[in-house]
Length: 507
Image 1 (cartoon, rainbow, N blue to C red):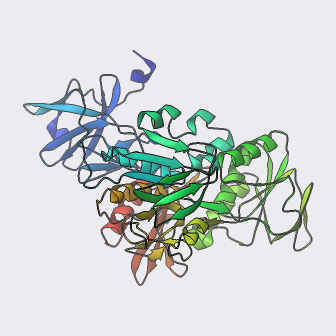
Image 2 (spheres, rainbow, N blue to C red; image 1 turned 60 degrees about the horizontal axis):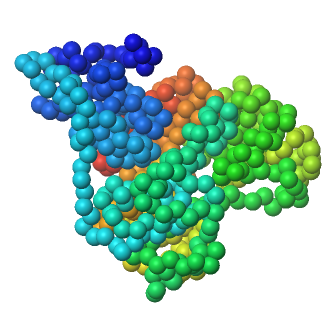
């Protein structure tokens, strides 16, 4: 027996399972032919697909079945139970699909099948140019091919690398727990096989909306039939003495992360300026590398505005229990070996990481005459005020059906917007209505957040935050706007469904 098969659990579906053992709306994990398999039931219909999420390996059987789909409990990826297709990010790869045979009162898994749909787009632009090779841009390029688009696709990014797993940069990769080969979302061969032209290390300087043409920083010009802007955001820079010292780092790109890792190898102490999600995730990761970590923030309870006081306090206490030191105040000056705060405190350090927010890269859109207001304004189909030009990801400000006009800087949102924009480039006319979702890790505290709460929304705690088994439910005018959960993965998925369907969430 192989190592893989020795770790398989549950019933052997090759030997069959009683139909009565799979309740309507339920899922059962087992195995067949040496692979983990999930059987799900919807009414009289049974489905069998691979049991492991292709994003980070989450157990789909512990997720949530919604109609004929299953949602991963870890990061909310979605799969079609009928085909195994990955239908919503962050998973980009399908799971296997298996044939089921019913014999009397038992069902058997008899082998794999290729049950992927063949699609033909309603409209096919002459070509599609995607500006930005991050979460939204990469997901859009892939979705165009999934939808059967056969025209030319050009993916242009100023980053020297092809699309990679950006959330990992502040989490396991920075902590030293993830190998570098895990970081690219796809191997280089994938883009060649899919006939996606890639141009890296290059910026788009101008857009001529009348000629439907973009000009690149290397002087080339490209025409387009449809254009997707996914230019993302850049870190807000410090504006204090010493901000330009070589000891000061930011974290946005793979190159940024590698620079921090190199500095950490020969360092003992680091100061992190900013108690944001990115700042605190960096704090966790660098503590994993045994550095002494000091966080400078302006909030007595970090993340309180986003997570509520109870959950924000738990995050802070968890960091403190793992050796992170918090300093309330502002950084006033950076010197070669220390950071001086506005109260005169000096924090010794070998280098500094600043995480004080990001700004959307809207200059290209503005120069082209696109409507902007704290982002690029788009309609529910993610199309700008110029027909044929779409925007997705950190720059897109869209009409959310629950929160109104919003712009959100979440990885999964960017990927899903890229996928939706791609379908709409092909005339699907699909509104982007899924609630925002993100996850954040802080030592053994793993937060799942779905929805979008306003600054004045009221948080209510269900469960025991200190026991790491709770949900914080945000409401405005008695309507649920967001739910942040720890230790309640399925509950967070149920909250996502409630928000999608416009229903109230009751844990």
